[in-house]
Length: 460
Picture 1 (cartoon, rainbow, N blue to C red):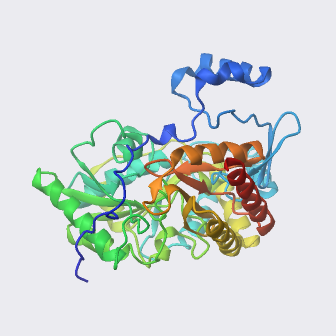
Picture 2 (cartoon, rainbow, N blue to C red):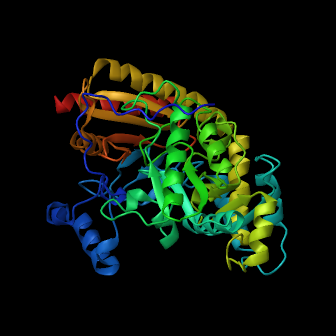
């Protein structure tokens, strides 16, 4: 496939707003603490004293929660919030089967990974069975950030390079190495010399006759920029639903030419599956599978344990063997017996409750309802996504498609007042991010869309 020329943004579109740091999206302003009701203000003050200034809260009025159940979070005074935001409790808050499995294992054995115990091998075998046969090994960690960090080290060992290509709004974790390839965490600082960023595969602002060819051309150009300054290319790191960039899922398959270009340049394809994995897109268990791809490395994080702290890197054996021959690696608690129990229980629930099929059906229902709403309100410029990961782009002008982050912030808080929790995404923070637990049903989708319609009407 011949890469098509890189196309500019819409000719009449205004200059893009400065990129926002991911921590600024929907963030609580501590200066507003005095206006909170007394109990919440007291908790904010305690948090500030203990955590210092680096811990971020959501919403103009932070949400206090005391209990979770399924797709709902509950507050201390009888409040109930429909959770359309949290992917970490992937099969639902406090799912009975996961709680029982974790509790039972915690009461039996939990220790480090230098001993033999069978449930971690059972989990490894079941998890790897959901992946292509070529991805046959796994290393367990405790977090997605640790997983990203390890995947980068393996890619460097396999390729002999140190340079990585990511997208402009990507987030891949918060270790030093993961932050370096997370432009959304570095919006006010220059990119490290070993990192190049390419635009997200956005056809709303940048139409393309062949999105796959254009994205591949941009990745190829980024690799050339690395090489021009003496940095050997190591890998392309991609979250297959481009979640922090603004949620770009279609058309399925467009990612394949870019992966081919990365491999032709001697690099690996690292699939970050923390966001699209475990059936969330509905069409496949893994985001890379929607694109017909077999990755070199697969990064996973907390959704694999329904919130229990666990992560992992699945790998082609040849790359892990090369890494192991040159490097020592161990993770004291990655793959501990309780983590394995949590992971097995999550797989049980995804299969037993047909949650991948539910993500597909509910996601299609929600997408159609949101698009119907967009047809009645020009402030909704675009609705996109796959399964139970959708984005609603808000614009100040439907002709220029200028982002409207202020409206997004007001709507997020308007929904919070109506008992619905969602988030924000995108370089400008103007995209509503809808990413609920996989048990989210059509009735919950209808509640969300009705509330969004009310919040838009309230805006005038």
